[in-house]
Length: 426
Image (tube, rainbow, N blue to C red; front, side, top):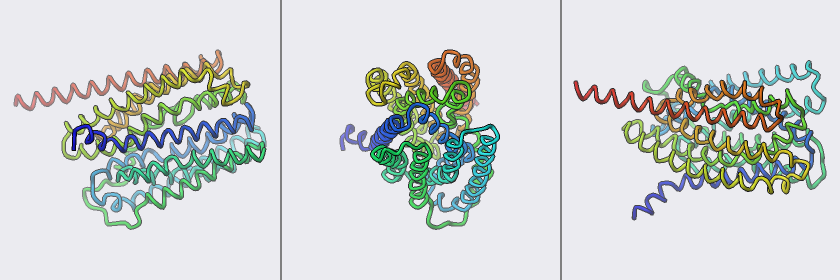
């Protein structure tokens, strides 16, 4: 086999993951367009707020354990079956906690005087907190075992089903926020169930002495949680601030602009999903081989991400009003800024995912801490300029986060080099 064919064969999983991401982005764009045209600016903002709660709660409740499971299973035969019992116990406790937190949020919304539509929609999506946890765990098993066709199919399933459902509501002319929330819940019900059936081990084996305890799984996950749970990308803190400080209409415009920023993130995320288990598997045998694998995948992912960012930035001025309608034209400037920020943050997440494969989940969290420190005051100040100001705040946070993470990686490499020279001298 020639070197060119060998390179192509090795990177087929990356190509498959990127194609799945393109499918997911297309589905998100389609569902966003139908939601915007069906519900209007204010209704689209209310739907974004309804979806925000289960998405955020399920991510935080997982404590990064699914990602930790990938590290401890990758490259280790039968490790998934041996850890199944421990992960099942952790999952059940997290599911109960997520439901309690979501219920408390509903009570708070009721006491705060939320509209009936917002309350009913939030109540409808209550089960999604558990379904999204199921999806995370099922995908983690498939990722660790590098079962890429199933992994990519299920990963794109929620967005695809949601797009089909929103198309159905649009054709029926059903202008209901609660109906849209129900369609979103149904999409995750199917995807979560599929991930559980295909990803979770069918039989468990007794754990071995070398297998990590539940405390180790949770500890690894928590150390890397901040690196995976970006306040802008994952926790959607920017949308929460807009919903509180501005208006539902502003949130609707921002959500429309945000629809274009998913592609760079998904491209980098796809590369990171493939690189993470492969780097972790290499790290079992050779630190230098794992580092070389990290550099290779980060270079590939960065080039693809920069290309996607540049194309979207150029297309937005014409594509946004054409897709969403002229009522959403004021979101154009914010959309372009958000795409730039998404490109920078996507490269940061790729680096963090690769560092996690080296067994260093804390590095991503250190970089993300810088993002939090920059974003919160910048967004509070930028909100005076409307959604464009908040968009610039998220972009500044992305740049600061990437800079800190790069500095941390170079510092780590310098420390390892110094330690190696000292051991050779001895």
